Length: 193
Image (cartoon, rainbow, N blue to C red; front, side, top):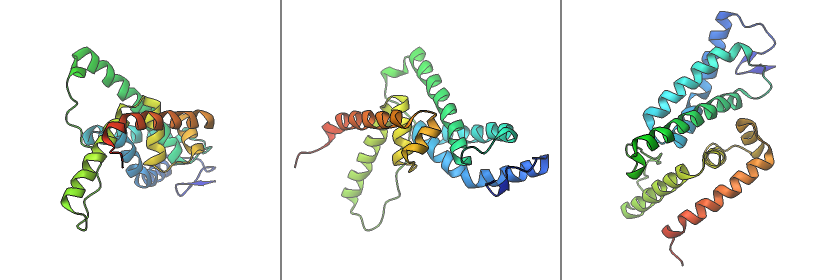
C-alpha cells in the first residue's frame, strides 16, 4: 500500500522515515494549519499547533498502520490537540475572568477582496464573514469541529466520523444541531425581504 509516496509494507528505517515524513509534511501542512486557524481563530496559535501536530505525527509515524488516509490520521491528531488547547483556554479564561470582556487578538480568515466588488458590498461581506466566524467559534466544541470539517475542509460525513472517531449518525446529529444553533444566532443579523 502506498501512502504519501511511500510503501507502508516496507520497513521504516531512519532515512526512509525522515524522507517519507517530509513528503507527508509538505502535502498536508496547509490543511492542518487551515483547520487549526479556523478552530482557534489566531494565526500564531494555529502555527504553533500545526508544528505540534507534525511533531507528534513524526514521533508516532513508525506506528502508523495505514488503516486510514494520512490526512485523516493527521486531522485526528490535530483535533485532539485543538480540543486540549480549547479546554485549557476555557479554564484560563474562567480563572482570569477574561470571559467578561470581548475576545481580542483574533482575526477571522477572510478571502482577499476582488477588485470587481464594490467597497460597501465588500465591507458588508467581510463583516458578515467576521460574524459567522465568531458564531462558529461560539458553538460547542464538537459542533464547531464537525461544521468546520464539512464546510471549510470539504469532508464527507464518513471522513468527519473517522477524523473525530465517532459514528456517522453522531456526525449527522452534530451538524444538524450546529446548523440550528447558527440559524438562531444569525437571526438578528438577517434582514427579512
